[in-house]
Length: 100
Image (cartoon, rainbow, N blue to C red; front, side, top):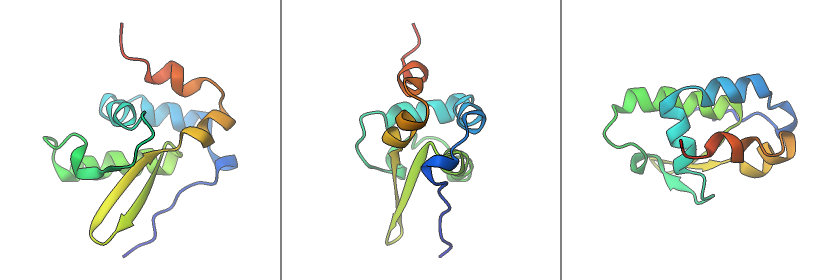
């Protein structure tokens, strides 16, 4: 299995985070992970095709928004809240707020 690339906290760029979260599906994924709890990828948006979800997870992972962890054949996701808060204080709270 290929190693999953995650940028180091200091390499996370604001433009990449905003581009990743600018897509409604990816924003919903981040909101689903906002509790900080690790979740199995199949639990998040199970009605969307796996191929589409793989694309969205990669965009979020490569931008530094989420961390993916393999356990056997399963992938688990967590929001990189601490890294993002250190790098861009207050950004997640602002972006992940539910629409009014």
